[in-house]
Image 1 (tube, rainbow, N blue to C red):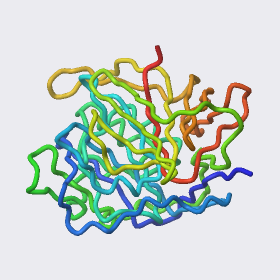
Image 2 (image 1 turned 45 degrees about the vertical axis):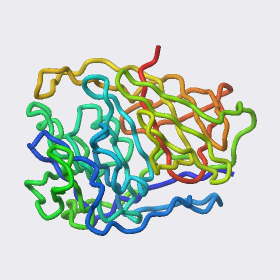
Image 3 (image 1 turned 90 degrees about the horizontal axis):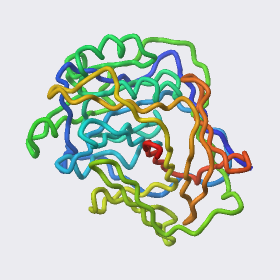
Image 4 (image 1 turned 90 degrees about the vertical axis):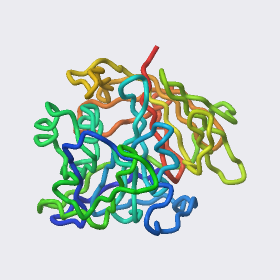
Length: 318
């Protein structure tokens, strides 16, 4: 038996997101203001349907000076996407019933985010800013953007790190999103028992041009231990998805003139799902931006995820 995770987007929510013209980012504050204790225990494994009041997506810095991150363990889904110079940035997706006290460091948005996040309905998007020509597209996109200039009480700068790696979000202080009719939205997350087959996989490495992610299986914890550029973190997802697709140049550049990569998240491609110490090869498909991404095995059967946090790494197919 499998379960689908649904999201109810209500008429009013206590969340909003930030959109700043400070095109910068933030760094993970090693000493945020009294963040709430986090736990690594995954949700109860019994299949069920879950409804949440809203979705919050936060763009998070992921260069070495930005680590360790704050509030990332509470995310339901963590997307890893390629940015300029072969580096990566994170898009952490939070459900309204599980929000950390602080999240960061917060950084700027990319064109990839607009199509990627559309599958979550109309989420609140928190980010430090964006390339000037991209801002009008963000304003028209199916997201609720807010910036530190628009919601100054929701952000703070930490003195423990230098700019631009020191901007943090307090989710509870975000302004409400505009009223809208509550309609359940399928988040595309399928949880259930491990499918048959798969091959033993105690560890797996995902490489970007200038970044490296390592995942090591912990049978004792039933989770994957994450390392970034060879340094172990305290992050422990239950499922890791490596989604191979098209990564091409976008229409935009960063402040130094580097062309921003654009990752296509609508289409089809090869997928690798890591769960329960095994690797399952298959295919992913997403017919339109409004639809969720579907992962299936080689026979076309659904590939359910293990209960707990999900990481999706968007990688250029070779």
